[in-house]
Length: 234
Image 1 (cartoon, one colour):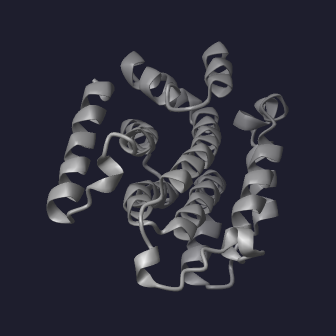
Image 2 (spheres, one colour):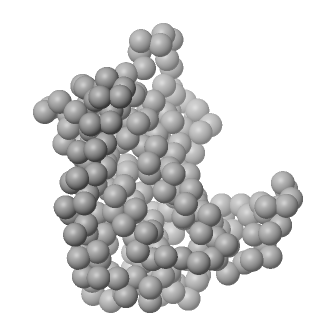
């Protein structure tokens, strides 16, 4: 069952960081809930990806999203705050790329072979929200606005727009776990996660519908109540 395996996996994660890297503070009673929720959210994506079993050249983007999710906990507990926000943008962008390149094998080959063959964000979001599997749901879920708003906000960390989007580290000892940041990051992660899971479920609905009830329940419990309610109603 996904819930049991998720709990066991978190025990292993906690053991790994405590025993091999001597990282204790993030797993203390006052901090562990946020770390556990980050892990549960990431695990929701891992369950979806592993159960869908996509056989397509665009699967590389799903694998990169998995890589991004797996890096979140190490980055957060070690205090790499700006990097965690940049990884969130990557998760969002790679979801759009997966959907776009799924039906664009020639463009994918060109992407691999030519450095300048790049699809810009505006084209990606336009294609994704016009896709037949997603279009009828886009307005109801405000998908374009959600994706654009979050991508724009997270891009400010990439470009260091102003001091609010900088880490401004002066000494190595300043790089450490911060509970306040972790709570803020968790809220951002939940929004991004709910959006990308919703997009993937709509895009791959036939495959998703074939998953077991426990798997679907676990995945849906990892997203927002509003998105969950909407997807259940389909």
